[in-house]
Image 1 (cartoon, rainbow, N blue to C red):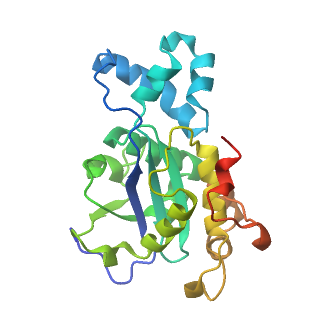
Image 2: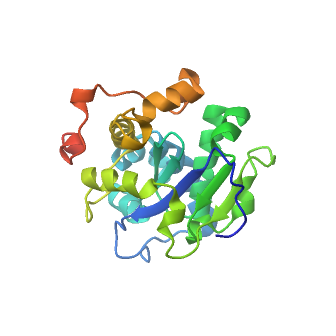
Length: 248
């Protein structure tokens, strides 16, 4: 992998944008300049992160001057995932476009929710793949105020063993969102529900404890609340597509 990771590194977050579903064949029909696209991004992206649907966004923001169908064509949704290896804690965020700028917006959102100190506690070292959306490591390593807050490392090609166990968590995610599932109507609220159920699943590697419980012990309730995580009672955990089907 690029860069050396010290052997005593305790907190290692992995992120991935592989869960990407194109919602249109092409954006060729969207007639906007780069400036116009950026201006609309400033409105749309925060609302997508808040779990709002394209219909809701267009209804409340007629100044965007686009139909709901056009907005769906504009979206190229993906899921950005984080995995804290020690606690096996899983986080996931809707990205309305899989770009470097959108990844940076997720980082900024996390920094604002957590504060700089807690962000550093959780994400001081980040291991990722070499997707183009992670192609500006300097931007991701520096926080909102330009202070370096993370170190970015890249996995070697075809070395899934370097990903610290995230593949098992992605398997759980695929149980709820099988391959070929359309992300068209998937919201951040849905993802929060999915994340809570995955984090409430006991792990043998944690001695039968759940990632949520271990993270609660290691970080405290304030950080988990800032991440908007909640525990699910054992008998209510559901890792099937039925978990979110009723929402659509």
